[in-house]
Image 1 (cartoon, rainbow, N blue to C red):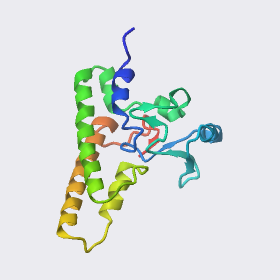
Image 2: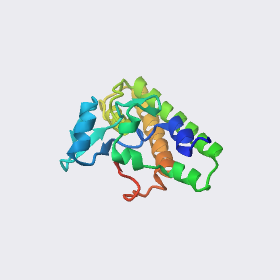
Image 3: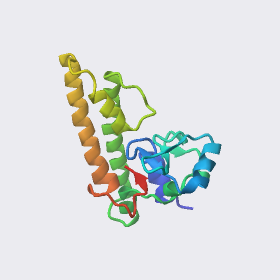
Image 4: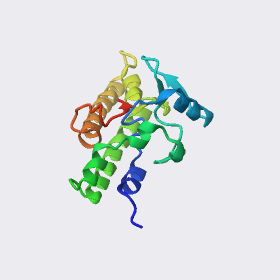
Length: 181
């Protein structure tokens, strides 16, 4: 049996679960929230009192979901633009794999800069980690300011890649994007 594109691409990626693409995942109803809490995941309420699963997801093991059979509805139905493009033949699997690898290299550079700037809280989404690192002391040393400029440029490149490759040309697509960016 030939593996599905989801098996091939998603298990190499994990960016929708690791805090890179989304800050949280909206849950469907209290029953789903309770079920996830019983599995040991932390569920929070967002500004509209809806239940959300914060990212990075605690169930993510490497690039695979540790609760795959019990994952939230929006996780079951979400397909990034890259996966959709591979499914409809607009891009080859090899090229899609290269896009994942390229994005991960860009993200790794951001993570290196975050560590250099002392931002080590890996429980926060990537964008939030960057915001915290960039909001540091105004009277920082020239070296720290240079690192912040590097981080800002690196994160800007990551965000462009995310929108162009994974979320669809910079447009928020409410119909196919059940996660909260």
